[in-house]
Length: 105
Image (cartoon, rainbow, N blue to C red; front, side, top):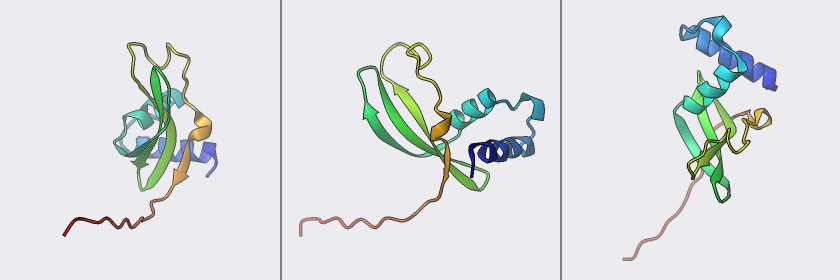
């Protein structure tokens, strides 16, 4: 899916939830992505005042991954010039990984 197709899909999901179509701007979608229940996250890089993370959320019946930040100091992401990276937003699909662990007997 292209970025515009992703935005259109998310917008249609929010409209189906009862949100007013005219309120659903890019900023609304950005905040919605950040507020959705995160079903998976992984640290990408650690810095002194923040950690860059990849988050995966489910909207409708699709999964989306995007880059976000966990702030470790007293400032906000906006204060540090960290903006939402629209290029990081993409559709993903789950896959299963089998892990074998061992225990003492």
